[in-house]
Length: 464
View 1: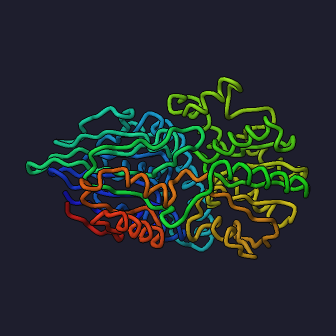
View 2: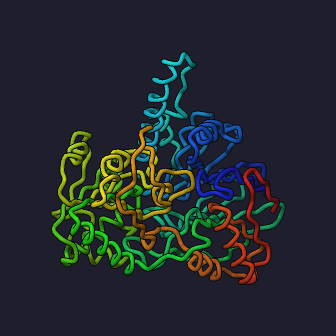
View 3: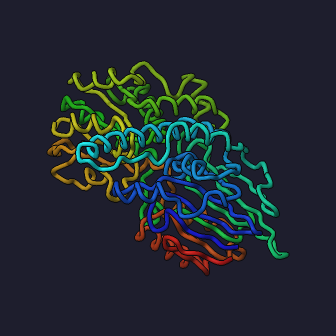
């Protein structure tokens, strides 16, 4: 078997790995690359392979950096099945359409300028119609339900504990008379987090492709994160300001809502209005409500007592643009949770534009901010911030809480991999992390006694 690392190699976006096995081409993920606008446009538009030659695809979870270029895959000629869990398919149904809408809107904006300059017009990487058509290719499989996806290749999903429906992807392969198991983590979740179950142990792993997003960092605990959230809300309320929270629509938004619900119910934060201002977040929360089979025991107990973990009196979900704009005319303390999590698109840009120059306000980050994103520039404390081409002075407080991260940190990654059979584990490939994180995790694995650990470069091919 050969593995080509075609995305998320020494970076955290655009996850894409191609397996060549038994004459078949199996694609793991087809994510959107996020970064410099022109580079992202070119990389996302031009797939690094002939899509019509891909036989089957496996998707670990619905986050856009893992799933977001699937419509372009279909548009480019892919005819096969896409294997994913039921919840992943449901989330992709809303997320891929939302991604298409953003791509179409961005191109429309760019073409206005190009018309004025007499330049040729651009087409979006894919359209809403492409996104809808791609859903026909999904084949849903639940955890621990093995399915043959290619000759002598059997797929079994295990719970990754990252977001709703996220899966560790185990491929049992027989090739040239030899049998082995390849495990692809997708994104690995954390133990003891709210809502979802802990990552499942997977037995009999021979080869591993692991993420390394936080391979050089440690997270705080969920309890510490909840206390930090309480502090930020109370301090900002005392200043008469707003808490602006950029949050990924799937996973992080629901975790923050759940935490605010608990803090509000126990009287630890004031009676402050809370708005989830994102149609995608609103729709994603409905998908969460549809899949209680993925909840952990703590969330079940919370549901028995309070019925809906994602809804309470102070909380309002906003769909309409007019209602979103109306928040800018309100000057009392409030909490606004909006997408995107890295501040690259969506309504969060408008809330930042209208609030980052007021020192009473707080911009609170609760997720990873990749290099070259607006969120990263704000987090790094740039004084002048460009939004929609205009400059704004950053005067609001900037806070960050990493205890809500849905990614395993360095210790949790090492602990999870350490519970695999080290005598059986032949090779580990470290992906989906910036270079410092990836090589730091590599060093930790080697110190644990894992013999062959590699950090592949983009486009590198490994032979198994």
